[in-house]
Image 1: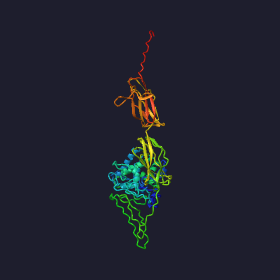
Image 2 (image 1 turned 90 degrees about the horizontal axis):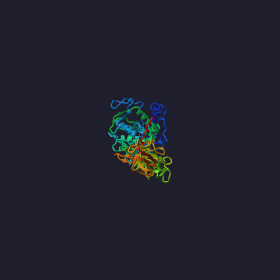
Image 3 (image 1 turned 90 degrees about the vertical axis):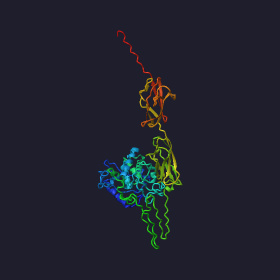
Length: 590
């Protein structure tokens, strides 16, 4: 669970204050401050503007556990089944299935996005502060939690205000969103970030394999390199936009990097303190897996006539129900028993949005495999045309296409700035050519979407050149000693994956294929004089198959064409070998 201190949460929290003091006191002994090389790390880093400017986050900035890692290093790490864990190392134990999910997610991300350099210890650190490692590893054999893990409803009462985005499908709450599962995704984020980590055909935020893989992809979007401290800070802040959260996660990362070990599922230690003033509410290791049903607060009693009005109930309202919804307390009454009307709720920024307008998006065109140089900009406006700031706009790529946003996602949610404008991440063209539709919608508000068209064109080259200058000659009925190799470029850069054809033509003025002279061979060894479906390699190179000659002598032309209009004509010569004249015999008497 996750939260933003001061601005979004209840102030004056004793547990939060204690944690903050402890963080400061421990900075010299275990904080990731300045390392041996003097590099600034998370403890001293300032959140970057691009990470902190958006109100969007994986968790909706929900509450999280604030427990600090122990001072004692977990080294050496005991192995599973070695008996009691030495004092000071119990926190280093991670439930077996949960640990397996983190490591499998790391492996999958190393293959899918090797430049991200995602460490599994980062997932473990986030899983620790979000859910206490899935409530100490209370998961089934498939990795699904034995009971739902839900954050409080984000109703603006001490937390962010995020109205329902999933009709209660994930959190059981059709009024407001709640963070869901061991990695605490809010439904609107899970809808695009969700992954199937255990290959069961489902994307379940309550499954640790699915949630860990989704968290990995979320942290690796925008081409962030998590081996770079700046990008690592940005990624963590995008998960929960809080400086305290960043510092805490980094301390757990450093702790787990010093050593960890596997423990049986369901035996992990449980957190005690939360950033929203609440103590840990997860069931203890000794309790059954089914959680105790929370009690529903009773309505305030009506005092006898002449008594003062009842004091308000200080308990949070409403509490969570086991299914993820929220119980609704009875409305308070005045001394006469008449229900007191609830105070009117002022409209949120989202409530004031009437429509979306294009904010000057230029023509969107890119070749297959390239990044689009222009980005989509959308402006949220009231009915009167006034800009609306701090509204979440969701950009969704629609239809059958392999074009994505940078980072491999097909959905991105961005908050509008002070000018009411949300700028989508850059688009990355796939290999499918044609028109791509990107739809902008307002999260939490039913207004007409705004569609943008982007065009993916075929990879192209505008120049071709031979890579060598050796003469291409052959005797009649023989084999050319040298193969033809060319390099394709586009505006001076390597043109990879460009389609090409090669044809032995009749003449410079007649590009039709000749029926005599040099030829290629097909798979059956038969003569062919046109090759199609050729492509340049990653270096823009195209090496043609061997050429052969029939008995016709003369000069012949090989023409190579590429998508984009690049053309190169190469001369081939077939001539009989010259026979040397016999040397004159020596004259008599010489």
